[in-house]
Image (spheres, rainbow, N blue to C red):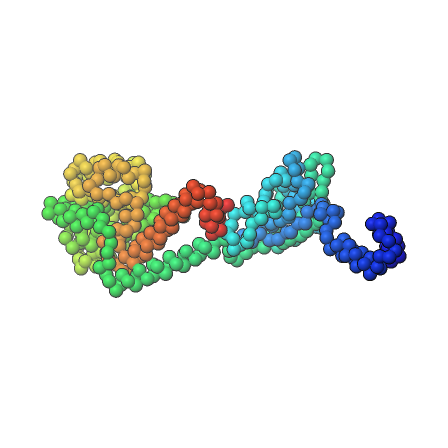
Length: 437
């Protein structure tokens, strides 16, 4: 204590008469201030090595590990990060990635807030996954280290490890699951309402209203009805024609009921054997439902050929020889659409077409009396049969699409207003609930 007093006497110039208690209080104050306030040395990072966190990438099927670390003061133009990986902690590390030090931040991650939380701007993030030079296997522990280098000096992080595992649920898709459940409830409620009220309103579709007229005209003229299911098959998978072909076979059942009731001849040529087998059952059931099983003929559905233009030429020949009074072109079509519809138009028949092949719609609209555009083809079976399940499903889908269109419109307006007024928080709100950046 005497040394401290002598020090302050020499520095501050206080006299011997100064109370020792004043020295003690003042010195204690300085000591407390010294140890409680961060020193200049403490303002610098205690270590320049990045503190890396390695963990399994959430919501994936395995085969990837995420790395996260804070930005370093040594990051500048010309510096880069290198990612090294090894299957053993003391083993040989292999470089799997290199990128500029001012890239790969948490804010670049795609995913909603409930998966990643708050995305920080100055925290780096990198996803290590399998590549041509490196294969990452799920269930195997891997060791990582990160090196910051400018070509001359390097800063190496401690070694961290993580194990990649497959996840049962992708939490980033939780919003899609919520929308799916809401949509399913809407459809089920719509079906229940359709059963209570069979005459539920459906928008009028002129092409379907004309089905009765077309079949009646063919009956009066004593000429057949020609029905085509398109050039698609029922193979499924990525085939764009499958759904349209299914819709065409369902509509065929309703048309066949009317044909059976009127006693008109029906001809359905095919180019796909599976489609022909399905249509045979649809027509047979339609005749039984109409109470006319005795008038059903097995040769109503017949196979021609699988070749596109050979089938087209054969159908054109049927149109020119037998002069059907009503032609139905339903399903998926390719280049044969105009060849078929133009030939039918020359005979003066009533022609009703329906397809979701947008590249063939102009030809049908030009040559046919009525055309079902896009989703009208799928709504046709519900419109014609008034089956409660089909009508309810159709109404539920329309409600869901209306809600989505409304959300899109409101979102577009809000984002536009936010950009005009300079309020980026509006866009941030939408990004919180999406998988995009």
